[in-house]
Image (tube, rainbow, N blue to C red; front, side):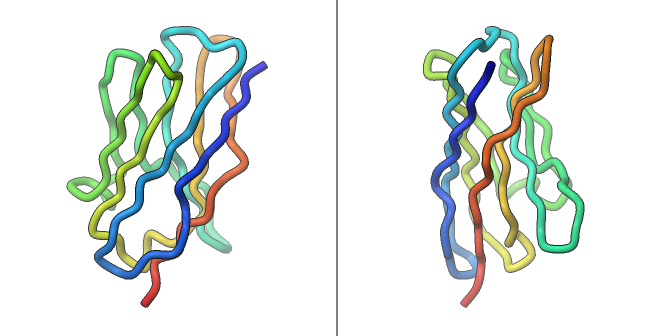
Length: 115
């Protein structure tokens, strides 16, 4: 079993920055891929960014150039640095881990961008 615990969400003004963290624990394989998804009210959950164990990254077009995903394999932790935040980035952000045997989700952390 795998547990994911997110932190770092909150309220920020447009143009501001936030850094999300997700710590994974349990039976984690070294080649697990990790990522961040988000879901706004009334919308589907969409990929924001993902990163492989080797460090290859993938971003949604809407966040390219503003968000950066990174991971610390020794700590089984993935980060999402979010800069130049916009009201459209408001959503619940979910951490995701994929490995042989399953897909796991965190409980979500709210990010609200508003003046």
